[in-house]
Length: 425
Image (tube, rainbow, N blue to C red; front, top):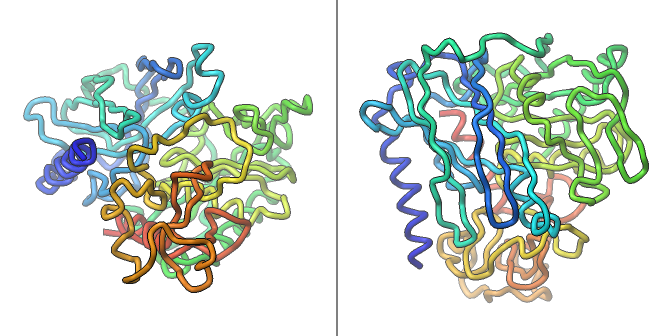
């Protein structure tokens, strides 16, 4: 209970401090990107500063500078260097945090390039990085003071490309802004990329709750060609010269398609205003991946592309966890059953009252038996988060569990709705 209380007070302290901050007093209408290298093993990790880069757009909320959601395996905060006032805070996850739960992480040390993007400060700020440990507590790991007038902040743009608008809703400051980034589309295939982005936008808007917010969601597509078509498939000795260096067989899982090259992903995405990144790989192979507040990545032409794109965006945008459990994955003890997962749609029942207990009808048995699946829409059904025992999901079925469209359970729909609306204020 002490752990839960600590995390709650930590999150509340962020929220409370942010209420007095006026965006225009502290920030310019553009972004500053901090690139760093994250290295370590299953039990250790280290941060090393790489570079600071000025980017032309800031699409985030000017009101909710401190995230309302205590999500992610990591958190970055900005505080005013002189007064210590909290100015901005955001949670996120990375490939590194997933890799730490694999068998390889117990044997070798690896390094991953990572980055965070925040509004460009007018005055010196302190960027502080926190890790969420296995007990769900936040631990301070790295701190760096940024002088926004420093001539070491790079203003050059490595990958400049034009972008088009797929869905125009309004001012990025009061809309959710999604950018599609191409992977493995050649210069001659940019027409196909534009058509694919329109199709994926349609898939997203065909699902609740996104359908209600079509007029509040901007969608852009950056026309950035690769030299070759497709993505790497190491298990089949397929190697492609692509812009973002994406690869199947991540952590030796055949369908897990990701890219560790976050520098290139951010370089390309920065050509348009964005809150969320979707990487579209030009391939027919089934696969994808979604990492909270990093990116969603999926293939263009697989038979299940509609489902996979929406599922992976549920991870990357909404912080939703996987609700399936009968699947081969590389992770070992991904969740500690003595503590609540941070994902809003998974619970260990350790502190169910701070999950979706309020949405459960009276007299619903908790845990909820599988034979009640047709009668009970929201309960606590055992199995989720890659584990068959000890982790519970809200409903028997959901888009985060099975190959199904417009099938987010009530808890996931509620979590996505709250996330969308946090960008609209």
